[in-house]
Amino acid sequence: MTSTYDKIYSRFLNKVSDYEFANFDEPDMTQRMLEWLQSALSQPYIYRIFTEFNADDEVAKMEYTIINPENDYIDKNFVEELLSYQLVVEWLTPKVNTTSQLNQMITNSKESKFYSQKEMLSEKRNLLAESENQVRSMLRDRGYIKNDYLDGNK
Image (tube, rainbow, N blue to C red):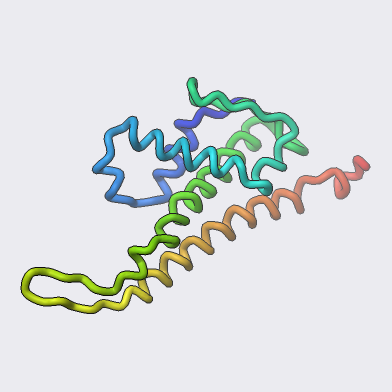
C-alpha cells in the first residue's frame, strides 16, 4: 500500500491552527513537516504496526504493509490519520519543552510586567497529552479489534 506525504500533511494541517506557518515559505514548511514525520515514524509504537516499510523522502511517498490488514482503503486511512495525529505530537513537543515558557517577564520601553504563563503551559501540556493519548488509543483500539489471536488465526 502507498501513502503520499502530502495526504498526511494535509490531515495534520486540518488538526492545527498555527499562524507561524504563514511566515514560512512552502519549502521551509514542508521541510519542517518532513522532520516531524521522520520523528513520528521513529516511534516504536508507530513503526511496530508495519511488517514492511519503505519511505522515499525525495518523491514524498511511503510504501508499507500493515500487520493484520483489513483492506487497502481502511488501512491506508488508518495509517494516514495515525501519522497525522503523531505529527501533532511532534509539533507540540517543542512548544511545551521550551525555555521561553519559563520566562515570565515581558518588558517594553515604559514598564515591565510580570505575567504567569502557568495556565498557557498547562494548556499546552494538556493538548500534548491529549494528542499522545489519541495516537495510543487508535493503536490500542485497532489492536483490540484486529488481531490474530482473537480472529483465531494462531
